[in-house]
Amino acid sequence: MVHDCLFCRIVRREIPATVVAEDEHCLAFRDIAPKAPTHVLVIPKVHVRTLDDADDASVVGRMLLMAARVARDEGIAAAGYRTVVNTNAGAGQTVFHLHAHVLGGRPLEWPPG
Ligand code: 5GP
Ligand code: ZN
Image (cartoon, rainbow, N blue to C red; front, side, top):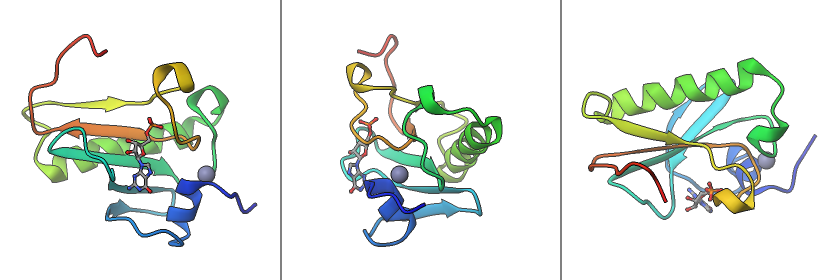
């Protein structure tokens, strides 16, 4: 099914993105408005609206494993990085296609805002 969704359009290469990793199931690309020196988004290629809509463990698991691989490849894994999945508007989700943020390259405060 073809979705009129920003991230589905990035998967179809209708919108350009700086891709850092890709396999059959997932795509990772740099966030257009980075919040840290490294800020990559990892998405499943299938359209899933939010984490609350996800029901396939392999989709969520593959997304997180690619996030970990990106963090290693970006050289931020040993120092520490954060994976964030904002779910619905109150948590700051603005693009309604499931994605994991990978943030690192600077100290990250806890708790987040
Ligand atoms: P959310 O707020 O939904 O958790 O995260 C969406 C993210 O997508 C934001 O960090 C935003 O900067 C990023 N974003 C929005 N539009 C684009 C785009 O066209 N290209 C890329 N690479 N990132 C985008
Ligand atoms: Zn989509």
